[in-house]
Length: 228
Image 1 (cartoon, one colour):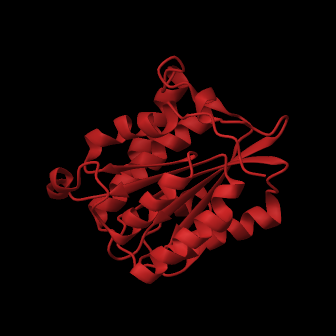
Image 2 (cartoon, rainbow, N blue to C red):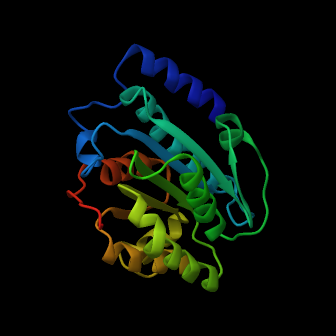
């Protein structure tokens, strides 16, 4: 079903503007870019056992929208796909969207893989670096603390912008709302959010949330000047 949806959206993308550039102004998603630099988007997806089929489907739908948007808007933007369980791996587009691998959860492995790839292929003085991450937030507290260290110490200093989407149960949406309550990863990233204006986060509980969250995360971002 997801493959059919991707193909349908791709056909639609070729016929009409899938995302209205007046509605979503991607130039505002690009704070203080490196002049004349290339751009790369890292897509990080949690595919661990705690991510059930519903959660994975919502995460994939979000990335489908992001993927099509980037393809439509930026011919020269590279996209790096990273999937993770208790270990992370860079994969191709087909594997990212359709592979059924599962396992335990160690979210920091995805950030470490992203950092490794940046060091090897995308120096921040030559590339504008962006990232989007999706997870259900079910992570060990100790590893969520490690994620804070990686984000504060390295990742956020390299990125123009980083968006985190947490997939939650519909029954939890009225409990969590927009507060800092929630999973260990949500609480950890809330701390990151307070320190880095180029980091934003939101929750998705059902398919109807996907477009509004996409609009929120990629439309109206404040200008950010990276630390030296």
